Length: 269
Image 1 (cartoon, rainbow, N blue to C red):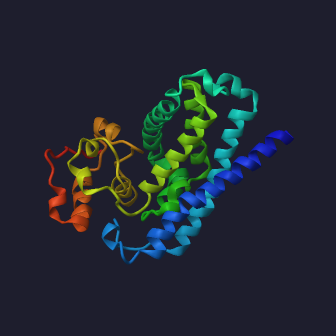
Image 2 (image 1 turned 90 degrees about the vertical axis):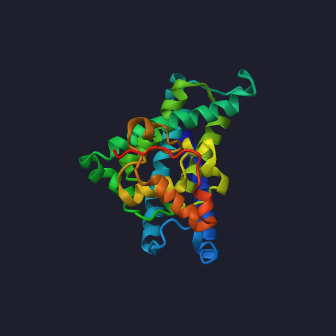
Image 3 (image 1 turned 120 degrees about the horizontal axis):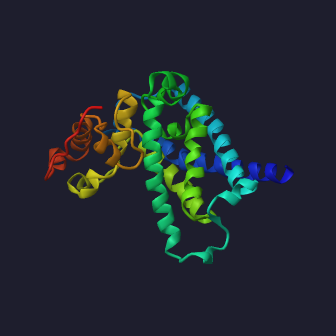
């Protein structure tokens, strides 16, 4: 028990530092130091209140504690024997490490999409997901701002991942960092995608900050985390997404930036 407590304190401390570094630096850059210079990148021109930021940080600390408990469960209890975690990095080819991280993101996106849709059931939404959706104008601090019960479900993806594919501790670390950084971008409140992204195949596959921001402002559609794939397959992509994305990019680069070879079809949920 003492050993598990030590692991909890260590993992929680590192996770808190990571949260304040990976969410804090973008917040300082976009919301404090350069906010006046980068207005064209802002998705919603109105500003969130300071009380919103403090609320998000408070709930994020609770979520971080929940995620830490899940990590301790996986690595420091007998449950580990039921996972595919491996300690010897030479047990698998060197290419498997980055591939396992990429596959983890695919698994996470699928898990998140269906879990997220369940969270929007009226009764479940009011009891849990409403905490996250109080941030109608999200910021980097919103990334981990969940109700405790939702945090448990959110963190459950790590249990799924280590049970369905071999993962080294380094791969788990890379996955959690990558997932959090993408999550911060999704909640950033500013669009950073380059001009050419609109005309590329990647636009048809990947989410953008506008994509998830629209979910926060409209409360419906765009349930995917990293990719547009599930939303488009299931007809839940918000019909205004492409129009809103083009509006922001035209605001940044001019109307030429919105020209596209083929307009994707968006359907209402």
